Image: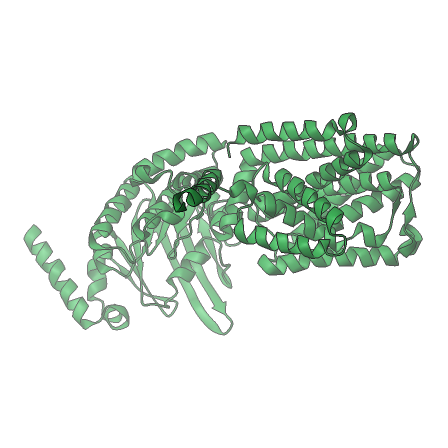
Length: 256
Length: 320
């Protein structure tokens, strides 16, 4: 069943077409990756889906309802959560308060006390409990990205859009984040990951969308995508594509 | 500082102000009225300036509007207390409508926009002579009983207004509204994404910041018996109120109360001792205080201060 649909959406900034006549659908419970070179319009697309920007034309439907004109806080309350590429905490609040705010407003909890209880659960889930009383500004980058995840989860989302949650993390931090994203998906949350790290894309995504100059140039499984000549030309490059093709073939051979 | 301690200190302070007629001279009682009045204004400003972090300079616009609505109503024969109520409602409605427009501005732009409101209001009131008396001002019905009785009545009125604004502050501080406003203060975009209806919350904060300025303005007009545009829409007042709040600790419950008390008392000391330079000295004091106390008096770590003093006291001994 589709949960989120973009119908021929476009967005212009002055004379520039950042997103052009783009359509796609997310099915309930799947993990989809959105990849593409810098400036392809990935973050713009997320902004269009969460009400930060309004499409110049086209429609966004969430659970069958037209939400094209929604504002960001309405998107959050509906269950369309997102994390930011550049993390956005409430710096002078504690980690717990940050997550409680998301639970109270986005998660529509009845009281500050109830929101705090939900926040504690989410801190436990994301492994941030030891840092609960630290100021958000005192966290490391990996910690802040985790905080973003905890905040989004506290909103009890149906669709979660992760805008480069792994950028700037080291290998072991990435493995931690991947485990966490899988755990979120197990809870039935539909996930759209924006990623540059192909390792993450290959291991997580059931389906990959490739964006280039504001248009979808390819769509399919990770294995199909790395063999697609248009994607190789626009984004991956020959060398990478060959390596990924090799790796996946070897992997299949080993598994088989 | 612990919240319960803040409530207790507030209660003690209210008792001190309210009991001035029992132990103080008329000068002291009058000072107590002024402090109670400014405390209500500062606590009001705290909703938008402290909790939401929007540097509003429109206090005098609301105060002046309240005093004119009150004065015109009283002159039309409406009983005094009802006139104050009208002034409150009118000012609140005005702020809600205005807020929906100027709260789209942020930071310095909002500050400039909000200060312009004061000037525009002053010009409108000055120009609209048929209704407001223009530059001649308006006389209000005199309250019978002589100056002493009148001062005591207004001590009671202003103290009640101060208590009401404090109670609303306590409520907002603990409620969902206060939480949302703090989110807006720290990161408005993130608050929006976290599901806070930022426009609605900011308009509520702005309206709360205006409501009791209207009441205070109307009560002040009844107290002095005469108002004119320059006094009612005074730039000094519109700047003094935020400074008082910043001095005490914006976004806290007791900060505005503490800041108003400290500022008013300092002002009195400088008036009394340096008649020529009092404004200049006050200016320097404000700059120093804001430089060294960015979180206000309440934001000070008193443990560090006492430790610092203890160190200073110990040093001469070590030298000898």
